Image (tube, rainbow, N blue to C red; front, side, top):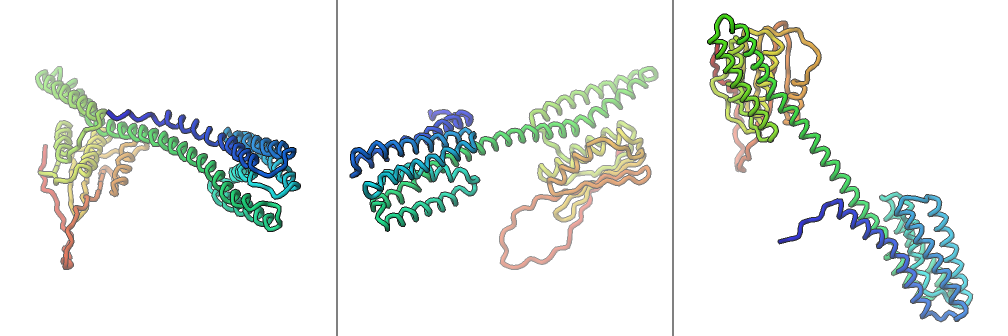
Length: 408
């Protein structure tokens, strides 16, 4: 069995530890390389302690500045440490120049100074700073070599070590910063996914339970009025309330599970039944067109929202559901009379409009006197067309209007 992948937080902690020790170990590495070059240099024995001390102090100060950068502290302290380290390094090299040409022992400590100076720049400018800094160091070394102050071996080692160590340390820090940004983006993506699921649940719950609860309320009112004059019919109405409650419970469970499918034909039939139970003459299409799942869901939600608002906010006697297909678009229009004066508040139509807009469609509504019209248009997905050798003749738009039936 393959090992289970470790969590991102644990991996980031390990990467942080690894990066920290990699960056800090550049100091002991530079010190070791300087000691090796000093051990093989022709410098007189009495001058070795001075050169070794200068290299040690310069490396220690540069490493301390890198540690402060890692912890995000000491803006001015880092510059002070860098300045002192540079002075000590130059003084030690000048001391060695009195006894002969300067050897390659100073190349590795110089790379730490270049690394710290590159970290002063913004993250996007560090590569450019490293390039210019390397060119400056190499130019100074070449000029000094022309005067005989620096040995040829020191020039070669400076060109090889200074950019290598500096780029390695800066790249390690950049790699860890990218990992931090990715982890942060992962957390934001998780928060957005939770927020999106909450919005989906709120929208689905509003769409599903709005009509069900309104129908249950209407049936309960009818049963209450008939209980004294017609007990049998009142009992039938209460059975209908029970059935609606079971359906509402089932829909709620499906919304929670996230697998509820909305079919346009089912929504139209459900709207016709609800309107009929409310005493509204409903004219609906005999058959709904067969569309893809997403398109049917959007149009079904529009029919459901219109039915809920019709019963809740109006006193209609007639309602009409109209479906028109024109080429690559489908339009569903719901019209009713008995509409009350428009009132502020409510978010059903706003949520519906947002959903249609995301799908490339639109939702329009018109309030004219006691007549209210809700119209939603959504494009149908295009089926892939095989390549044709000859241009097809232009076909005029096809306009199909579903046949209607009236329910009283």
